[in-house]
Image (tube, rainbow, N blue to C red):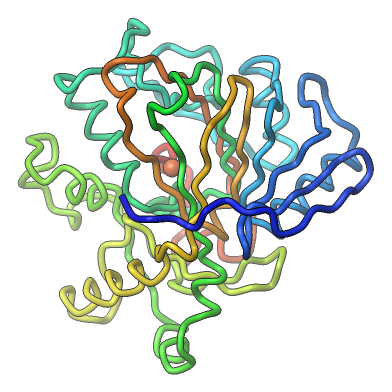
Length: 327
Ligand SMILES: [Fe+2]
C-alpha cells in the first residue's frame, strides 16, 4: 500500500444549507447538511452536482439514502443509470437491476472466502487503479457508493482516489505534446489477468479475442473544461504503437497519476455514508483489510452513463447496446 496524502481541511464554504469542505489540496470534498432520506430540492441537487464537477469526489456523511430504490432514484438525477443485463449467479439477488453489489457477501449473504474464485478475482481486480467502465464502448460518468453495513472500524476497506486532472496538468509540456492525440485500447480481461496472474479463470485467454474499447488517453472533462489523464488498469496498449512500447508508456503514466500527492484516501465511518465520484475526472481503487473473510461489508453502487463528447471515445455507439456492466 502506498503512502497517501493525509486528509486536510483546506477550505470550507457554505452554499444554501449545504456546507462544502475540501478534503485534499487539489480535489475531493465533503458535503454536510444534505439529507438524502427524501428527494432534495433541485437547487440543492445542482450544488451537489457542481461540487462533483469541481472536486471530482463528493463524500456525504450520513447521507441516509433510505433504500436501494432511493439510491437509484437519486442517481437518476445525474443521467441514465446503468442496468445490469444479467445478475451473476455468484451474487446476491438484489431487487433493482441498477444496484451493483460491491459487498463481500455471497449468494447466500455469507462472507466470501478465498475458495470463491469468481468473487475473489473480481475483488482483486478492483484493487487496481481504474475508472469504472473504461473497458466499455460508452464510459461511466458518475458512480455512487453507499455503505449499508460496514465492518468494525480499523479493519480496512478504505476507498482511494487519484486526481487525474491535476496529474495531467502537472506533466511536462513535452509529454503533453507527445500524448495528446494517443488512443488507448481498453480490455476488461487485461485488468483481471494483471490482478490474478495464476487464476485458471483468465489463463490462456487473449484480449484480442474479447471485446475491446478505444478511448482517448487525454479526453476533456466537459463540465470543467480540464484535460484528464485517462489511464486505467483496463488500458491494454496504445493504438499504432508496438504493444510493449505502449504498455511501458502506460505504466509510466499510471505511476505518475497515482503518486501519493494525488491520492485521497476515504475512510468509511458510518452505515448510511455515501461517496459520489466522477469517473471522467478521477481514478479509484478498493483497498484490502483485516475484515476480509471475517466481517460483513455490504456496499452497493450505482453507475450513471457518460453523455459528454468523449463518452463513446472512438467506438461505434451501436456497440454500447451490449456492453458489459461497469466494474
Ligand atoms: Fe470501481
